[in-house]
Image (cartoon, rainbow, N blue to C red; front, side, top):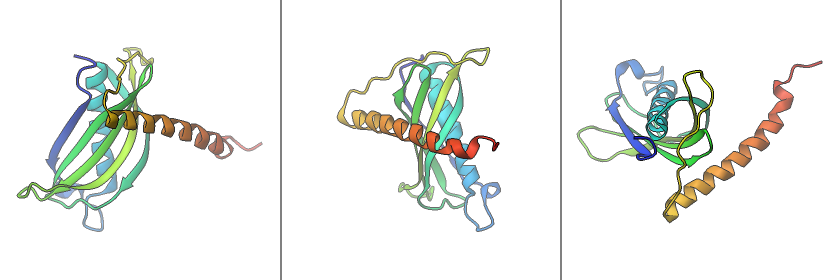
Length: 161
């Protein structure tokens, strides 16, 4: 049911097909896992099909090794009318051990869409405790920063002439 569960964790093993030339899990594979978890989280919250409109602040903190168990934790930290800001942390470690270390974190913005592909309203998420209020406030500050960065980038995306 939409608007009830704002967080989820995907778990799996890093496979040999995920390796890069340096012998660690490829950053592109990690970004795919992040996108999958963000989609599952946003679709679960909204009860609708969702598309990725922004992924930012991706930080690769430590490598993931083939054979590691990988946990991608996704949590809605802000909702707009049709959008959801999802905070994601990727943790990994030896499956024989319970310890998981942070490898990657970022924010992804998902938008719910209707059958025609038009943005569709999502249930509002209201923070209740201090930690959730901090996360929401951080999402609001990041929105403001993205607007300023977007304005700066206009010179780079407009055709010359």
